Image (cartoon, rainbow, N blue to C red; front, side):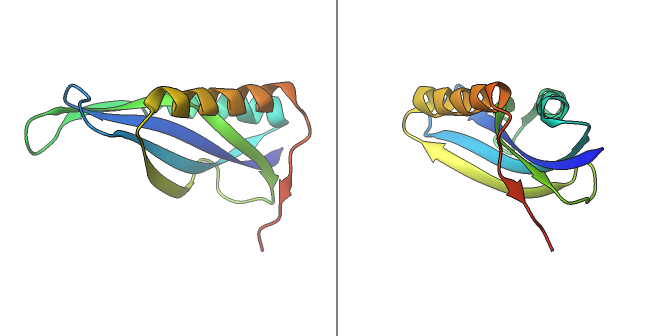
Length: 119
């Protein structure tokens, strides 16, 4: 088994979505046999952790899984731990999501990824 760091992207929509597009980028630790399994596990986490709730103004907030856009093999750490999260705002939600999907497709089609050494 190996450890991987995956970037999982969610789109955050409040109410009817009439606001600047927001995205949350989370770095997650994934334990897997290889890159394909790590990618699939990261996608499963993304899908499982989508959520909907009412905010303080009683508007529905949804966190919609977009895709996994980065994947790095790393040294052993804790499986599934969130290491980093960033809210990304974009004036063009469609282009941002297309970029995430393109990066995900590249991960699936390429077995050459950078190794990240954490000390």
